Amino acid sequence: MSEPVTNIMDLRALARRRVPRAFFEYADRGSYDESTLHENRAALARLRLRQRVMIDVDNRSLATEIVGQPVSMPLAIAPTGLTGLQHGSGEIHGARAAARAGIPFCLSTMSICSIEQVRAATDTPFWFQVYVMRDRGFTRELISRAREAGCSALMLTADLTVQGQRHREIKNGLAVPPKITLRNLFDIASKPRWAWNVLRAPSRSFGNLEGRIGGADSLTTLAQWIANQFDPTLSWQDLAWIRELWPGKLIVKGIMDAEDARLAAEHGVDAIVVSNHGGRQLDGAPATIDVLPQIVDAVGGRIEVLFDSGITSGQDLLKALALGARAGLIGKAFLYGLGAMGEAGVTQAIEIIRRELSVTMALTGQRDARCISPDILLR
Ligand SMILES: Cc1cc2nc3c(=O)[nH]c(=O)nc-3n(C[C@H](O)[C@H](O)[C@H](O)COP(=O)(O)O)c2cc1C
Ligand SMILES: CCCCC(=O)C(=O)O
Image (tube, rainbow, N blue to C red; front, side, top):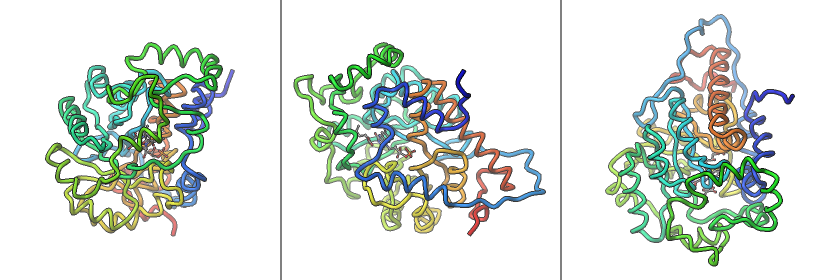
């Protein structure tokens, strides 16, 4: 019998065995030399926690609010593309597991299950992440579909108007629409459980992009497709237009600089996500945890600061809270759970982080996740 799963890296090991290599590596790897991918985790690991004792920590509360929405803990599921290819119906499983756990799920523009399919399969509002396309009419359409589906926040991703090169993506021949090549045929044949779940799913291609991805005769690499479709002219001036289309909660994701954080606050967004896209975009960018304090300082409480890139444990999450984040998002940790065990794996990933956060709060003498200060870190 194999050992029980006790942490996120166990889920990663299982996912690696169960998901075809091209899709596992799409999730797992970073851009260029992957220096930022590694630094995200290394910088979190370097921070030391202050052990405190003789404090009553019997009743601990993890509950808080993110953009005004009550959550059971300061965590959300980050938007991820191709999620339905880590596990069939992956977006639906992710949304359901998050809802059950009392945390937000964010659906990506580049999801396999469409906004409408996820809406039909769930009863808790989810967030929608939008990529601004060159075709602004289509972008408007995406946002109005999210409104129609009752999405409770819109997340505008700012750090991928041009894709950072990912070597594994090219070497694995990842294409739009996703396809089976000779290279991954044997791999897929050896993963019948994965294939069965994908075949049963309501969608096997980018569900939100019907009519925009061409047929099998117009295959293109992911990077080429993005270059053709995503709008590299995106600027702060476009925010007023997006605000008009979306009067609800608006989050801008991909902020790594204090000046950009200030600009976001001035442009009337409700929150930002300090993120380097999980080390998938600008390689050479610092770890997100290293820029978090200056960004929190720059916005001075005007807007909420969320955090992602590198969280693989409750300890990581606690460190981000200590440095001023309202909550953290998980991309890879979520996908490892999904790839390992579908919906149950997502639940397990969330509960692993919840337990670690709760225990680490106790051991640092903390009772309330809303009141974690830099005091818990050793300087
Ligand atoms: C496989 C994968 C796909 C992603 N796709 C998107 C996406 O479609 N939109 C987006 O805004 N961010 C996307 N991201 C970035 C995540 O939202 C998040 O910023 C990142 O995963 C956080 O780092 P972590 O993976 O270390 O948790 C993706 C990340 C991964 C790993
Ligand atoms: C699938 C297109 C891009 C999704 C994304 O943001 C990522 O891969 O990081």
